[in-house]
Image (cartoon, rainbow, N blue to C red):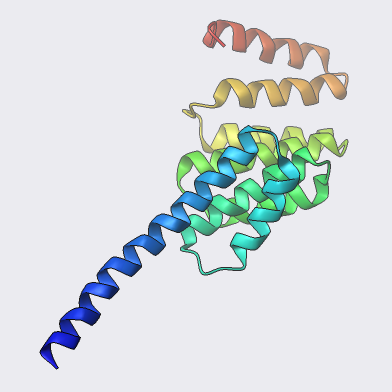
Length: 167
């Protein structure tokens, strides 16, 4: 009896950490597919992963990659919805900002330049010390250009050159 309990305990310890590593590897595989620009495969893999039991953190990361794959595949409305869902969950700052930028891109690609600009301004206000501020300025400048707001676009582009000369 004692031996079977110990065997069961050892088996559980060996099995469950491996399951966590397998999931972590799948999330990393998903990231690799995105980097390799295999968005169709990444989209499919993300949907499959979301059908499994994931921690909230892993689910949000997978959702983000799903949104990114939708964006790159031209399904801008779906991408916006996915990114909005991630942002609504208020994940860690980096993922939050990346998903917010994804929302801005999805709006921009649909031709909703005013909305994209509003979202960019909102992100600037919420995260004024963001490491992605140069990119956020660029998104706002692009929307201003599409809206024929030349002066504001120029100001933002000059701000990028001044504050982020290495970018």
